[in-house]
Image 1 (tube, rainbow, N blue to C red):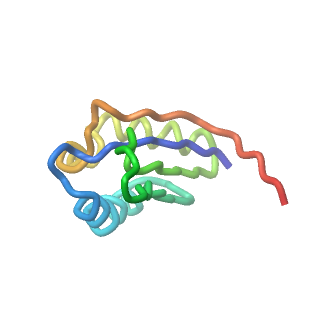
Image 2 (cartoon, helix red, strand yellow):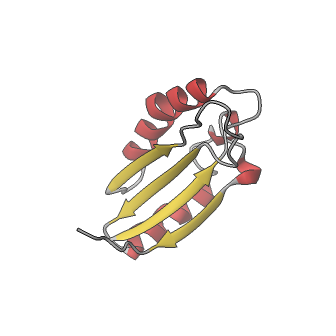
Length: 106
C-alpha cells in the first residue's frame, strides 16, 4: 500500500460546514468513481472555542494498492485538471501534499 496526505484550507468565505458538506457529498464520491483509490479518509480539524484559526481545515489520506496506481491518478489528475471543482471549495494555493509511511503502535 502507498499512502499520500494532503493538507487543505477551505476557500475564503466558505463556512466549515459548507466545505465539509461539499467535500463529502459531491467531491469525494466523484473522486472515488474516477480514480483507483483504495482508501480515502478526510480528517476535519476541530477548533475548540477561543482557539486560533488553524492553517488547514482538512487532512486527507489517499491510499493506493501500488505506486503505479498513485502515479496513474496523479497523471490523470494533472491531465484533466483534477475534477474541475477544487477551486470552488478549496484554497488551492495553500495545499501541501506528501507521501507518508505509517508507524503504528499497539
